[in-house]
Image (tube, rainbow, N blue to C red; front, side, top):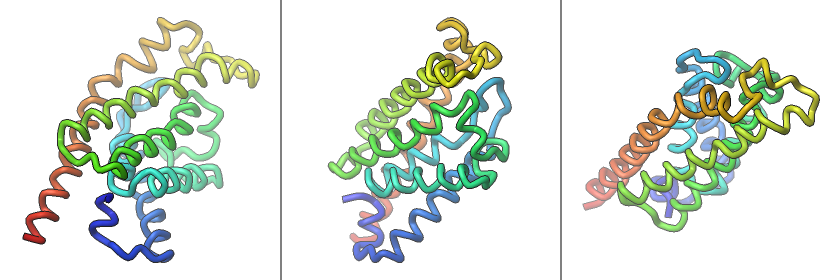
Length: 196
């Protein structure tokens, strides 16, 4: 059982729609809290996605992220620094698509009953690490297939990828994974205490 189902056991279509809209708004707000870095900004977006996935579960978490991506594709300024659908064709395109996988991974763990701090943090760390696969793949190869010059993104070698796309974010990703685990396990503890 996910935290969302524990809080709202009878999830009507309206309840689920409100969850998706509220969750996508939460991610959009977190995306605006950023530290400008080139070529990829450091944001609280991944923290919000971890929280949404861990709270909603795999299906609702992934659906919420898809709604968020759809909002950006429609031109709404929901991505980092007020970005919109154009971000899909920039250096963050692979990360944006990878957010769906991130929410699904942590959501799957939540669906399967992972609730403890260590287990939740480990799953969040794994999902954060796996996010680099589509992010780096887009920056290094898929963009070139699409005819985009990735050298201007600092993505023309693995050394540059490490320097600009990975190394600056690793500590922050670990901290965000632990914060997400603390928030969710704290919410479970508060819910259990309220029912006791």
